[in-house]
Length: 219
Ligand code: PMT
Image (cartoon, rainbow, N blue to C red):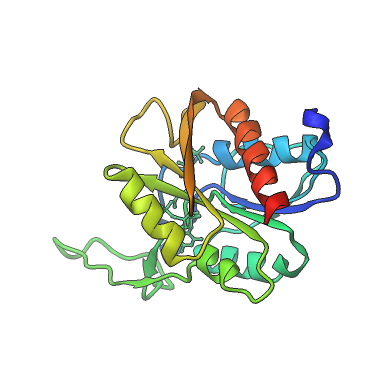
């Protein structure tokens, strides 16, 4: 398979959503199914990589040969990643990590006593930025889920988070992106870009990994 181009490479990938608890029975989350990240984990393992998948709560089975570690909230995912990142050559952040979490998690179910309910949210740690900022950072690839001005925001994240590459998808189109079996990506790096047109997530995963592998070898 693609000549085992990633043989011996240690690759970590995050996938799926995170859940940010409001009380013991409620949480705030998003529409990520984990399909894109799991497809990348599966293809990377087929290409010979030693894959660690840090997974949010999804209903997918772990691809063969992949080491999966589960995390529910952004804080848990951050801990799971940072505790294991020292060994990694490549990091891909495909999880839809919640940017904010409720400041206070009620320890009992909140009752419906008022007409309005206000939840104050505080910022979560940025896993991708923290990985890229390590002194011995792996080759770091981010994702950007955008509904408009895709290139502008994707390039902004590439620079601000000091990434080697970013894969942007337009999540305003329901036929691609969140939860569908298809996606399209545009890869951006400092001096270039490449469009990977709509196809299955597994096909796209292997095209993405071939580009990542090339750029990783060149650095
Ligand atoms: O899971 P699927 O249903 O298959 O859908 C796939 C997908 C649309 C979720 C996926 O292709 C995708 O775009 N993933 C990134 C979603 C996202 O959170 O994008 P963002 O633009 O908000 O975040 C930018 C990058 O920072 C991402 O690499 C994200 O993992 C990372 N991040 C964000 C916030 C945070 N606190 N920590 C992070 O590491």
